[in-house]
Every structure is written in structure tokens, then in C-alpha cells.
Length: 332
Image 1 (cartoon, helix red, strand yellow):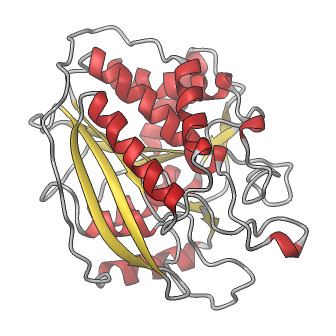
Image 2 (image 1 turned 180 degrees about the horizontal axis):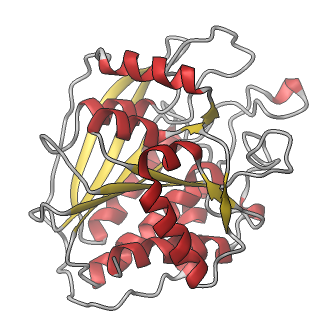
Image 3 (image 1 turned 120 degrees about the horizontal axis):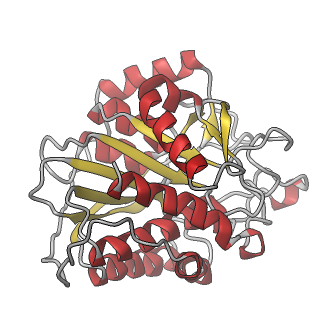
């Protein structure tokens, strides 16, 4: 995620609409591994389970494309979605980074009730930043980060949601996407000012959805939803394109007692995966993302530093985000 002016976003949208890199999608599907049990009540989001899913990702090490840790973690995510009964699609493609690096990437997609035309899209990115470029010590800028919050927390919360969906049929189609190559965006020290260097996986999917003519009523992005001091302001582009859903989500969170996390105020506007999903598929999306009015960078002092570790992850924060999303699914 990266701050961007409205003019830059408009220019990025124009470039995105003109075509992509020409990569082809390879979709593989499997039959659901387990049956879905019918239920009408909103299931209980298990924060300890979500915390475990976060820690398991971090145990692999930094999940930077083209690394052993990245491949191993991707295999783990595929296995977990399969275990939780999703119909699986894996988009394998090579994406081009801002510096010309060729990134072996996988968008990992789990579909529930795939025959139901009424759908909700839930997504997060699973890769991690190859640069600790927010460190004050410039000698550390080329060191990859653990990404416990920035990457693993959103994925961990969605894995717990997938586990609950598998046991409690929501009566609606749900698609969970783990986007790759989100955090390989151009660092400040590169100074080339190229457009669209972030969110490469979602850019690819927006042009090549796993299902032809894919549609969803709305989407929810979870990005940095595990920090012990997290505050979720109403993100600017979410308000621009999906204001009714933002208000509904924040009101539900407040009703459930999570008002200290979901702040009733508009925050900044950030380039994140939801921008490209909206532009490419015209799906209104809400970005639930930790931002801070007190940190020097707007995202919390751990953002894109070597301090983005499990020491910062708090089950209560995962619970606030995850239970709110479940409430949106089951009590819509």
C-alpha cells in the first residue's frame, strides 16, 4: 500500500484500462474437500486460531517472490484452503517488477458455493516487502521484512473465516483471494517514479479473473489487521467508491463493541489491491487497513521495517476485524 494523489490514481486507472503485460492465467481447480454444514447464526471468529495462521506464515520467513520461503508458504495456503473445503483456483504467472525483475507469482483463490451468482469477495496479499525501506538506518533498506502485520495478518484472518465458512453455510457465494506481488512496489531509493508498481497480483487478476466475467456485490480487503495498536479509519477511496458498505461495516463493528478499532472518521486514500479490483472488475471495495495519525509514515512505526514481527500481533485486533467481516457475511 502506498499513498497516492487523486491525479496519480486517475492516471493509473487509465494505464490499467489500456491493457496489461499479456500474461496468461493457468487456473487449476479441485473439488471441495469437505461438505459445508448449514447454519444461520454468525459463527464465532476464533482469534487464537487466526493468530496461529499468522504465525505459521511468519515461520516460513519473508515471503518474497522467487524465494524458497515464498514457494513453501504458497503451498501451505493452497493446502489450507483445500482443507477448509474451498473450490481452489491457482493463477500462476510471471509478473514484472519496477526494476525489471521477473517475479514467479501465484494468486491463490478459494471459492465457496461457486454456483451461487450472489457473491462477496474477500481478499488480502500474502507476499512480503523485499525492502525494509522505512528503516531509519539506510544500510537496512535492502533487507526483506517478516510482514507479520503487513501481509500475514489479513491472510490469517481470512483463513479463519474460511474455516468457519466450511462449517457454517452462509447461503451466499464467497470468494477468498490471496493476491501475490502486492508489496514489490518501487522503493523511494529507486527514484524512477514508474506507475502501477504496487499490487501486481491484483492488477493481473483484474484483467484475468479466475472465472470469466466474474462479478461480486462488493469486496472487502484486509490489510494490516493484527497490530496491537491498530486503528481502522474509513479509507478515502473506499468512501469514494463504496461509502454505503463502509458505513455498514463500521456501524456493525461499533454495535459489536469494536469501536476502539473502527474509528468513525475518514482517513487517507491509499493505493492498495482494492483500487485495481474496483477499476478492473467494477466491484465496489472496502479497505480495512491500519493507519495512524501519530506515526511518521501514516501506517504505524512498524510499517516496512524489520519490526513488523509477531511481537506486534494481538489476537484481539484479529478478532475485531474477523468477527466484523463474518457479521457482514452472515447478517447482511
